[in-house]
Structures are given as structure tokens and as C-alpha cells.
Amino acid sequence: MNYDFDLVTDRRGTFSSKWDVAPGELPMWVADMDFRTAPEILDAMEKRLAHGIFGYTDVPDEWYGAYRAWWETRHRLRMEEEALMFCTGVIPALSSMVRKLATPNENVVIQTPVYHIFYNSVLNNGCRVLENPLRRENDGWEMDFDGLERAFADPQTTLMVLCNPHNPVGKIWDRETLARVGELAAKYRVTVISDEIHCDITRPGTSYVPFASVSETCRQVSAVCVAPTKAFNIAGLQTAAIYVPDPFLRHKVRRGINTDEVAEPNVFAVTAAIAAFTEGGPWLDAMRAYVFENRRAAEAYAEAHIPWIRILPGDATYLLWADVSRLTEDSTAFAAFLRKETGLFVSAGTPFGGEGHRYLRINIACPRVRLEDGLRRLRAGCEAYARKMGA
Image 1 (cartoon, rainbow, N blue to C red):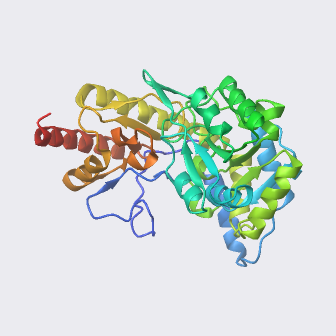
Image 2: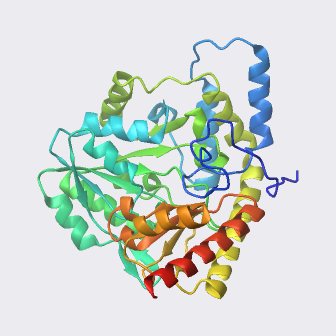
């Protein structure tokens, strides 16, 4: 089947968080896509909608089967059915696990710059964020293992939240790196919560490594959060899963999400996930090819026309991590300037921690015509800011 990712869909008037902006503004910030989801998912949901009764919904065997087959086929991870749990989202799962597995004032390690809502899940539950900043090596990113071991060795450290693949830098962690994380976690009795929500959005020809697939050690120390929501643009359906191989840890996690009432699906959450993982593969592969062509086009345009910024290479997510330090060390002020002067709405890197104040995050999961519009606005904004600052 041919899928039309060039189709421009007007999202205004749909209560969209992303598109609730002023007329003339172009939002390229929050991480959802401007593509209609896979028609196979729409067909399944339309069939469910036509039934006309929307009562309480259980998680059926088909849901477990869909997740297990997808991860075994796509990612070489065999999940045991009893180790899978439904949850309404990755962030609800993360927050619930922080509440259940850590006590107030204990440390939770995150690797900055990283998805800024991690901070909320930790701080809002009375725990402390302990940053283990990533190291930029040329145009790539690596973990600082000396710093990570120091963080784990602190007796107050209970949890690590791993981002795999990493948002916002687009890094796919290799097997050796993940194995070292697992060994250190086991040594210091730290539980690793691995957020793998972006795992299916990888450069064509590449795939990610599930943390729990690396070794028995990684399996025993981890709770892995996965979902179809990013890959298939169905975040508003609130559907995800937690995979916890270790029975003792699994019991704690299950009790946590049930106590927090985030373990029951809405009426479309199960239907959409089953359709995504059983029928959505061709659409996903076509979307990945389109998005990474968008990335190639954006990198080429920036190199040719926007000398003040550097889009760093990435093999995962539909998010660009753009170094703007030639213009400014204050990405928050620069993002506000771009929005005011050009209508381009992108994410400042500052809330992501680490050296995020030197970066912007730009969402390129959109039709090519919108990407081109955004790049022109970015160029105009950089030129205006450079004149203003005398750069």
C-alpha cells in the first residue's frame, strides 16, 4: 500500500496541544507527528466505534500476543506474557515506579540532556535528580561511566531512568554500553527504568537494542517501558506497556500501577495497540523512510544556508538536536525570539538539562512542505538574531 505523508492535515480546532497556537505560527516542538496514523489502525478503531457501546475494557490475550510477536520479530526480545503489564502511558508508569520503588530524598539518576518530563516524575514524587551528563564526542554522544559509577555508588541512589534510544540526542545505545550500565546497576543494587518509547523510530537499516535483551543481568535489574504511541502517532489514546522480567520487581511495579489506577485501558487503547503491532509494520517502515529523508533535507539546508547552527547526527527519533552556540548560550531566549519574529515554535534545550541551553529541539515529523516552511523561518530568525546580537 502507498501511504501519503505529503498530505497536509489541518489540526487546528481538534484540541491539539501542539497546534493550539496563534494564527500564522508553525509548531515544531512537542513530540507528536503531523501524519495521520496508519489506516490499519483507523480501520480497527472505526470498527470498534461502530459497535456503539463503550464500556469497561479488559486487556485480552491478543494484546499480549501483539506485543510479544512485535518485539521478538523486530527487536529479538522474547517477552514472557506474565512479565507484561498494561499502563496508560510511559510517564504514568515512570512516576508510579518512582513512588513505589524509591522513598523521598533518594536519588534517581538521569543522563542529561534528556526528556525534561523525567525531572517532573522524580521531583514531584519527593526524590532528588542526580544528573549524569552525557559527553559530546565530536558530533556524537557517549556515556560518562566514571560519573555513572560515582552516582550509583551513592547509598542514596535507588533508580536510574535510561532513555533508549535517547531523546533528544537521537542516540541508539549499543549492546556493550547497555551491558556496562546493567553491570553497574547490579553491583550497586540500582533498578534501571528504561524508557524505550522511541525505539521503533530509527533510521532505515538500523534498529535499537532493548535493554532487557542484552544480558540476564540487565533483565533482572530492569523495568522496560514500551508503547506504540510515538511510532504510530496515537499518544492521545494513552496506551503503553511495562515489561519486568524479575518476579519480585514485577510484583512491586504491578502493585504500584494498580494503586495509582493507571493499569486499566480506555476503550480504544487495546484495539489500537493490537492493530499497530499486527498490521502497522508497512506503514511504520514508510514513515521512517520519509522522516529520515526529512532529516537529510534539514541537515543539507542548514549546512548550506544557516551557518550559525549545527544539526547533530542522529539515528533515532524524529527530533533534531541543533547546536546554536555560535549564536547564543541562551536557547530559551532564542526560541522565544524565533517564535515572536517568525512564528516558528520549537523547543528550547534548557529544560532538558546538561548543556541544553546551547541547543534547540526541532520536530520534523511533518509533511515536506511544512518542513521547508520551518527551515525558511529558522533561517530568517537566525539572520535576524545575528544582526541583533552583532554576530
